[in-house]
Image 1 (cartoon, rainbow, N blue to C red):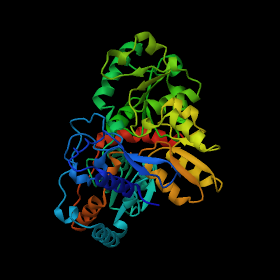
Image 2 (cartoon, rainbow, N blue to C red):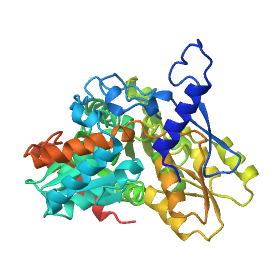
Image 3 (cartoon, rainbow, N blue to C red):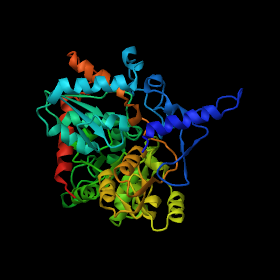
Image 4 (cartoon, helix red, strand yellow):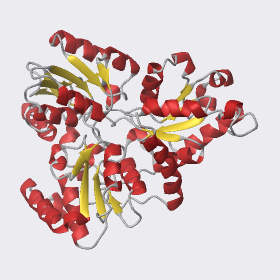
Length: 453
């Protein structure tokens, strides 16, 4: 099967060849590019912007997250930008880059380990020593003390977590500093601390969040793995915890044993879907909008709440809709629909199953030959699952080739540059979390590790 990157390039090439002479160029992200699917007979795919076919270094210095699912998300002014790559790498052919990466990997040996996220492009995953979700890869860093460096082919918050969990003498490197995460950026530490002050003023009985009735805190802070190290540290300092999409229910149960309610950030959808499955009503889940007083709620709404949801989301998973599920069921009677819990609640409720990336992978692994699966998660993973199970019909619910904008910034040219820099005794793009932040984050992460589903 053709890789997602090749699908996008092919679509753009066809779009360009079909454009009449003298016709003005269509602005990026305005019109999709029709593209025949290789996974679902008779259907069409399209890209979410022609710039997806551009090399990352052509857009790294531009403001914003770049083309892809997060193109419309607002990026913080403080978001890191990637400096220019030497021409040796930007002008190299795919074959040259492959040769350099393989040679550097062989020479570096066990001193360096490459970590590749499930959502990475195939052109990167093939070099990874370990492939998994953000938590699995952070764990891989923790479990390999022999490595001097970890090259994290993912996004910024993942590299931070790996740095927190790895040894102090080990370095964690992000090949492209522009690989951030718009969801993680939707909750800044300044906003979270301001929220906590307002919650304390409304819910703290003695002007603090000290335990009250039955030894419970008024509010327990819970943050998803997809958040900055600073917010993980905030949770560690304030009796809170980190969760993954796999153990969110267990974490909320842990939190309710210790607190009257939870404030959950940054992903409102994971928080809402998990709480609804536990019997918590929509009325008990007010949405906190960080730019409004009391998050746009009344004091009474906050006092009556069980889970206060931060107004954040994943732009990839927000694209999935109930209409897409209904169409899949019409086109493929008997199809099994599986989605990620970062999808909106109506989508999760209309699906046959919802769970983490690892859950989705295991569902595909266990499917009987000939089964049809419609999956609501990032296109690179869906495409790879189809490659691994050619005896199944697997397709992405979203009929648009629209990968994670920031994951897509990791390109073989950056990996080759990183590995050859390490060979030369340099450590480029090192992600370092300060000792104080790392210590508080580790408290919240250790609580998460103990909360086994």
